[in-house]
Image (cartoon, rainbow, N blue to C red; front, side, top):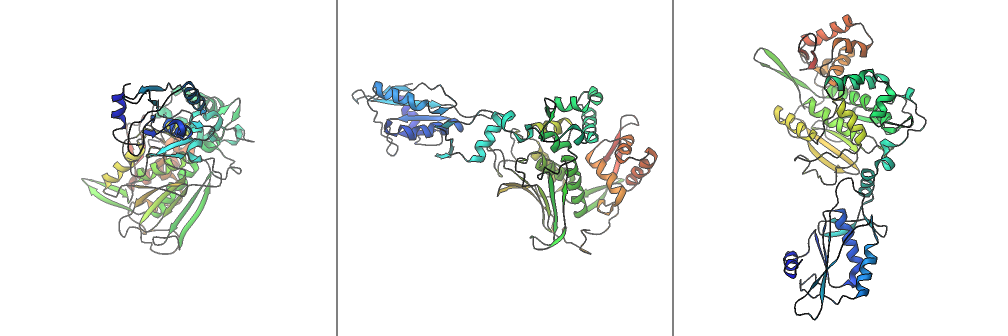
Length: 475
């Protein structure tokens, strides 16, 4: 590196990736910036330049100076290999610039500390890293030690898991080509071990969150549900709380949304197309994300669904990945699941997609139906996704019993009892076959066929494919 290179680097003044110090008398403060660079995007730390005037001064560098620099660099943890460069300043009688470059942080690395304290860059300012950010990075770097989903589930045995839910997940994974056909013959213990949800014969928390039956000790495994009259929380129309594993909560949440959102239909060609006022696939994706990516270690906080006259809000305890904001999350981005073991099982069973594509698919579904795109908000330790309702669609009619907009021909909101249960099974298991529905319901195939046929005649579901390989789908 040359003196001219330094002139070019400092030409833009101090910024996120540049810190200027007048002398090594500010060495300790400089190490705070070095730690911040290591935890953010990397950057240059240069001693011998006046930060305000950008005047290049240099300083005398002695053996003592070099030893002091080596000592403060040893205060960074994990250890970093940084070789300071000493650049002569023309016309300054042996004065030199001291130049150090620090590489940036990438996902999965340990967070850096200087003498036990982590720092990061917030724009051009060096700040102490928030505890939440530090803990998230620790979980990413050493998940086996810090991640909630990888901790042993105290007092939980295989018998406390819902084997039927596990088998259903495997069946869907095999049908979608995300699991080998041999998985259907494997034992539950073998499956959980391959999914890293068991260790040394012990059930882990992630398995309980996905498949648990007895969740009395897991207060975070709940979903709060509310329908409010108007646009605030002053008056309830319907409310409740559901306890259960991921699949229980997903089913209950979607049933609540279908209960309180209106559905319309139109004739296209010779067929009638039915649409929930907010696309069901977008709502399901949002709820799946909320249940999957929440901070499950926060045992006293739970996700929720709130339906107002003008909007639907789905929120979960957590935060967006640190490189995303409510404004940028709709752009293409990598996938950093907060609970990667849970997310991997949901991907293999086709309940979740990978590569950070879920937001884009929600946006596409809303655009295709001509409704507003979802909005993201982060506040009070929660991530909230908001779907705007069309004007007048959310006005509550009739008795205060949660029924909205009355009966509509072919309207899902008019379904009750067994037919609603069958509909929800098809909604959450696209491509499901009669035998599988019968197994889920504990009824004969002939009985289930009649119920499926009734929903088909109403134009709510349809059969696609051949007799051998086809299945039922929501229209």
